[in-house]
Length: 183
Image 1 (spheres, rainbow, N blue to C red):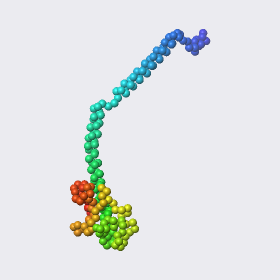
Image 2 (image 1 turned 180 degrees about the vertical axis):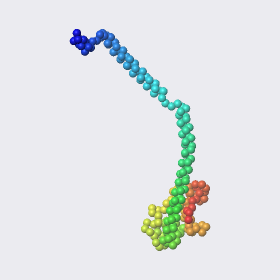
Image 3 (image 1 turned 180 degrees about the horizontal axis):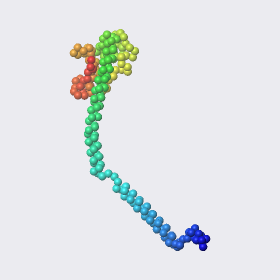
Image 4 (image 1 turned 90 degrees about the vertical axis):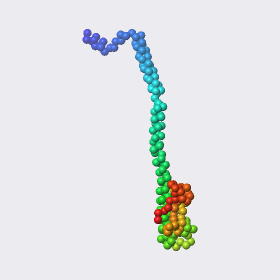
């Protein structure tokens, strides 16, 4: 009897009829296809629900406008300040070159000789270095205008070296004001 029991334990006995097995498989397939259809429908509804509302978009636009209102004026003002600083630096460079010219030649260039005397030797120059006093030509101001040179200068100065400012005209105020070299 133990032999018979062992045989029954190891052999699988299927007591369910074949029609019931097929019906159970069809139901399992229907459940899994219904579940897949539900998942797909929930994804579609999830995507159709996503996006921004008009109020959210308006809030972002208002925030960007406030930031632009704070930042833009500061950035625009820096450009003008940089041009003035560039002009002041260029005037100091040319002024130093004029001082070197005087050391070598015992006088500053005349108004007629102008700043060209710093890049091309005048006929009456006693000592003139190879390449001139300013390599590559003399610099322009921050607005790409030529600098003005007058010798002798006004108010007892040996020369006047200045930029006409943004407008390129004598006089003016603000960015259009003339900028003079500090002697």
